[in-house]
Length: 95
Image 1: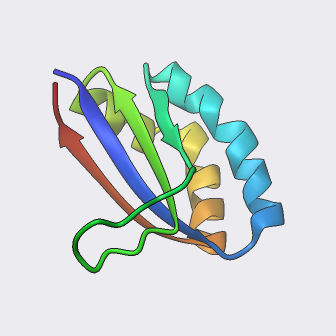
Image 2 (image 1 turned 90 degrees about the vertical axis):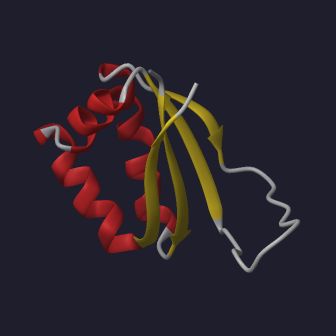
């Protein structure tokens, strides 16, 4: 079953974030993931959520997401993201 990562990023250092943005796509592809949304205009219709930068990925399964999130090659990039952005990230199974 397909699974999705939904991310809301509040980037504090755009220059440093560019490194993350350039290097992470190869790891996403390695685990069968693909970008569906990568930034873009956001319009809130209901609720209090005010997302800054929304990114949406599709992976073949929740297991593939686990493998991506726990990949040793991703550890340094994840630490970089944590240092330069506030992140809300969830994974959900879908269709």
